[in-house]
Amino acid sequence: MDRIEATYYVETPYPLADAAAVMAGEQSSGTFVAIPGETEELKLRYAARVEHVEELDTVTVPSLYAEQLPFEKYYRGKITLSWSFSNFGTNLPVLCSTLMGNLYELRQFTGIKLVDIQLPDTYTQQFRGPKFGISGTAALISPEAKPPLIGTIIKPSVGLSIADTAEIVRKLAEAGIDFIKDDELMGSAANSPFKDRVQAVMDVLNKHQDKTGKKVMYAFNISDEMDNMLRNYDTIVNAGGSCAMVSLYSVGLTAVKRVADIGQLTIHGHRNGWGMLNRHPLLGVTFSAYQKLWRLAGVDQLHVNGIRNKFWESDESVINSIKACLKPMKGILPALPVLSSGQWGGQAIDTYKFTQATDYLYLAGGGIMAHPGGISGGVTAIKQAWEAAITGLTLEEAAQKYPAVQQAVEKFGNRAK
Image 1: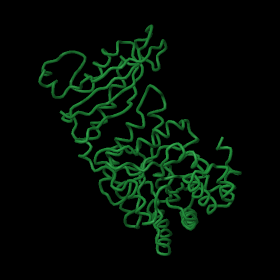
Image 2 (image 1 turned 90 degrees about the vertical axis):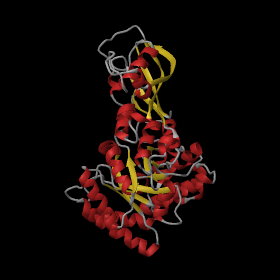
Image 3 (image 1 turned 135 degrees about the horizontal axis):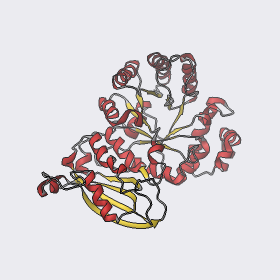
Image 4 (image 1 turned 45 degrees about the vertical axis):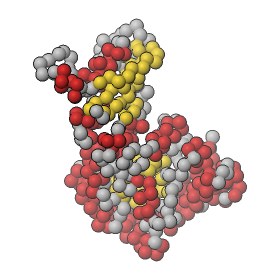
């Protein structure tokens, strides 16, 4: 029987095998005591199974509070559980509740983190996943467009008038940008109603397309209540747009899958809130597991942070997130990794060196807007930095070859350290 497996990194004061049995019971057919109705036949078909237990080390101080503390030592290890497809079918919310539900509250644990999910081909093939993915995103911009796609974020996050936003968009389009997005904090503000902003921005971009043949992609943030999200989606379609942005954690799997299933717009998935789910080493979910659920839901573009970012995340973690988005899943396209957070051309060199890949949407806010050569200089510098990276130049060599890169190094060079 095909089964879904999930691996957890755990900490518990109890023997790992005993703790694993508690997890399996809580997340399937069992309870704290044997009850009528839970027959052997039922358990064989529906109960979670403990597939593997690996002991790692012990500590004397627990990672998380639990009522029954203290104990003399706490065991750390990896536990792999599995479930039959029969338990949840293609219902992503129930799958999520099974993998990341009450087990986080079990008193037997002082730490649980979902490390990865193994989804058999027979399961993933039941989902459409991203409709556009990497190549589809590029094709919506231009037949000549190819990753890395260069983009930016409209700043200030809130407060700009519609006219000011449209003017920034015009300058970015004329500078050769591929992609522009709303900030995740921008919805339908009093000074910038969603429908009016979409119309003003698309008027600019549609005119630019008429002149150049290139349709700069703008990701409008449709995150809202479900009915409003659907209306916002239609507003973008009717104005000739090609992309809707959603704040994944804020709207949830069901809402994301609902809009992704429509299939007229590429879906830009912003992961704001992910740090709350991941930052503690013994609580939450790793990005490797997280991105699989969102790809099943149909997200085409997924934020992964960036090299030498402004947040807490290490370069190693970012690189692992990039690789996770690009890792094959049967019947499911890779998600386009979106690199952002304090990026400028300098990180392009290391991003390519570390990953040997160019399938990225590379977003720079201040790295473009604050460039000494203005918006045009900022876009040019990042494009040239990527060209240098692919041809094997160092940042110093790129600065010698390209004046716009040299200006960027002088302005942002402290971020290279």
